[in-house]
Length: 85
Image (cartoon, rainbow, N blue to C red; front, side):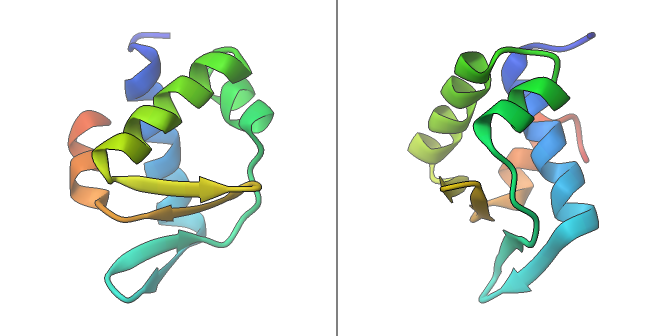
């Protein structure tokens, strides 16, 4: 892995937005269920570390998530962190 946890989680959420995202009122709703365990596993980190990254994104107002469903409120900010994705 070449990047820190926040960058990898942001990149994964951006990837999912590109493949499974639906635009709803200016936001992007992921049309796929992804657990915290899935997010950790697919980003090469623990569930706990992936969850801390997700909580940071929520605090910044970029992402909202509950029960495996995610809404990306600020895709630009998330994409910048992910390296321009």
